[in-house]
Length: 114
Image 1: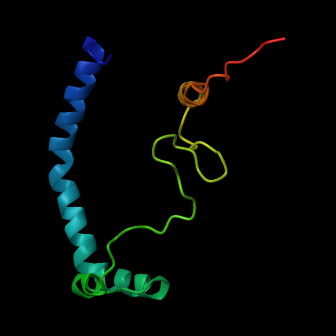
Image 2 (image 1 turned 120 degrees about the vertical axis):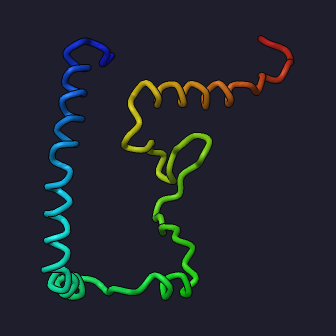
C-alpha cells in the first residue's frame, strides 16, 4: 500500500529528522535522568511498592496474569458465550458456522416415517 513516491519521500524525510534530532533527545534524556531521578523514584514509591528485580524473581511468581474469565481456545468463547471484544463480526460468523456444522453431524435414527 505505502509504495507511492510521496510516502517514500515522507519516510526518507522522517528518517533524516530522526538523525538530526537524536543528539538533542539524548542530551535531554540524560539531563532529566541526572537531575530528577531521585524525585521521580520518590513519587513512584508513594504510588506503588518498588522492589528490586532479584526479590521479584525470588517470590516465585511465574509472571502470569490472573484472568477472571476463562476462554475456550478452540471457539474463543468465554464462560458467558461471548467472543473477545477485538473480534469482528465476520470472524464471529465464521466460527459460529464451524461450531454449528460440528453439531449437525448426528443423523436422525432410521425408522418408520408416517
